[in-house]
Length: 354
Image 1 (cartoon, rainbow, N blue to C red):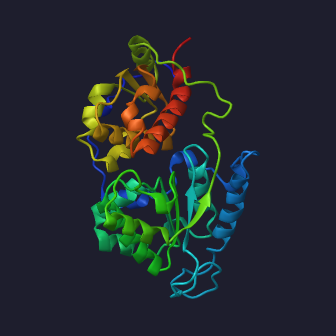
Image 2 (cartoon, rainbow, N blue to C red):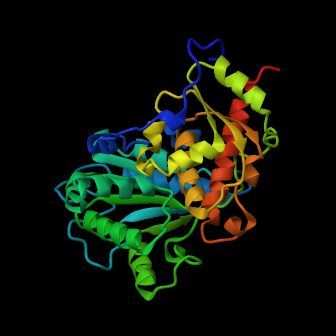
Image 3 (tube, rainbow, N blue to C red):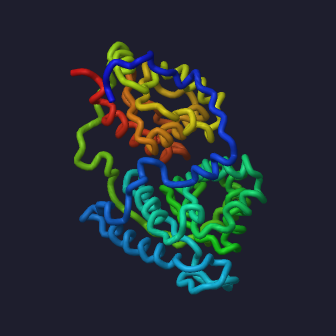
């Protein structure tokens, strides 16, 4: 990978990706990092029995999705056509802290479900809301309504509008027999606490939680389990040299990249990194405000999904967010971003010549 580049590094700031709606649908599969994960490649922490239990429950859930679509004929173990209101929830909800392997398990469920890929969808909460924005609500229901399974990663409700939107969408999909699976860092009934206290908002949360059977997964962040601390930031010169020596690398100054992210819709952050082998950033510093911080979280998720190393100068990634941000309503998003960027920084360390 490393070696003299034919041309200089690219700049993410120079990219203005356009993503057609068809691509948003086609890309609703587990990201590259989770292409090959399976239940038997998940390594449960021996000290956390809930992790092994989750594998057992999810394996059974996947097996139960075999046969005809839930809205059609055929034997079904989990869901019955026009099931009465008293039946069990039509989905599973993986609750746990960042780094306990929830996305690994969710992707394993997608792979293990006995249905062709076109009948299974996998995307983050943000990607799902972006799909509705691109297709419209009714078309999204029609597009996903024939699916066997919808997996939603990083289920976090940031505003009441998204809560109502997704609650309504999932209710319609459940009515059509679609099984649901989701991950987050907060139990469904607790989503939104510390963010919004409106009665309507809390009522929507409660209705949403009824669709899921919560499955708690305890444990420590595996990205830090037994691993060394993240490498200290490099110098501007080291980062630039590595960018020029690494084929397919990008090189941007961090403040400029943050400004550029404000001009690109988060649904395009994945496309923003198309073909990028490594992201090199100079002058990394604390993010100035919450809107900027939340955009950076989405970019960190897309970089992590695609296993793109991040080489940086400036402050360490655990200094990106202020104490106020880390103690606020979005703290779990920020800790996830720190965790993922730290892992990508470790991956990038070999790019710097010793």
